[in-house]
Length: 95
Image (cartoon, rainbow, N blue to C red; front, side):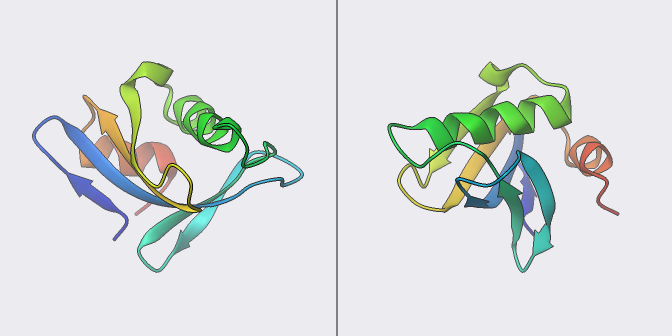
């Protein structure tokens, strides 16, 4: 499962496709949430686009989402502060 609850929030594994036609959350495949972002993988633009997309979909402030691994990789790990696993699943539409 791409989601893991901690005492301060949720850790989420993400696979990103940069330079897509639109920003969107695709699905869960294997142990990762799949995202597409329009931004290119240059100078942190795709990373910021991932944070912006997650913040929008989860109705959170961008400051509550931290990239903790995968700065220069397509496979990333984000930490979502102050959120419970059940709330995150509900907002993402995951059963």
